[in-house]
Amino acid sequence: MKKLIVLSLTLFLTVGLFAQGPFTGFFKPSSELEITSLTLKADGAEREWYFRPTVSVTAYRYDYIKEEKTFVGSSFNGFGVGISYEHYTKNANGEPVKNFGFNALAMFDVTQNEGIGIAGTVEILGFASFGPGYDLTNKNFFLLANATWTF
View 1: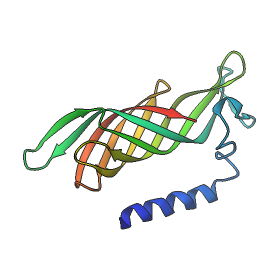
View 2: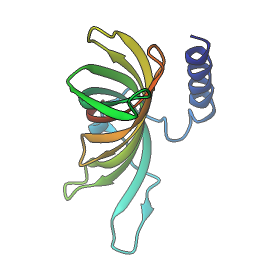
View 3: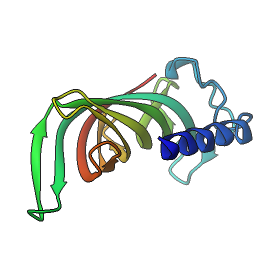
View 4: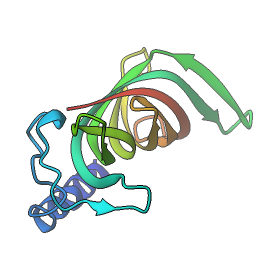
């Protein structure tokens, strides 16, 4: 429980420090992001990073079992909420489009082994994310394959 409180406080301090930059429009839909200070690349594309609220559903989870020194898989066993740091570009219509990002999630297990954990994932293709995590309740390491939605 102490680790969760320390993690939460750290995230909230980060929000305060970066409130004027990549947190601009945090509670707006991503379609309304005002991409103004973009980095113009040699290919003419414009890109920018933003923090966004994120929700994920675990498609597949591999729990590491210490005694057996092996991974055991289970599907659709949890969900997560958190924050993501995402890379946006403008499409041909000038609208912001997310192409990849990084997520910090609090994971909630909804099976018989109910518990809470933390995870860090990399998001690709606009919704698929993969990464490691740690179950704080059952004290074990896991790997995730998630579907992620950013608001």
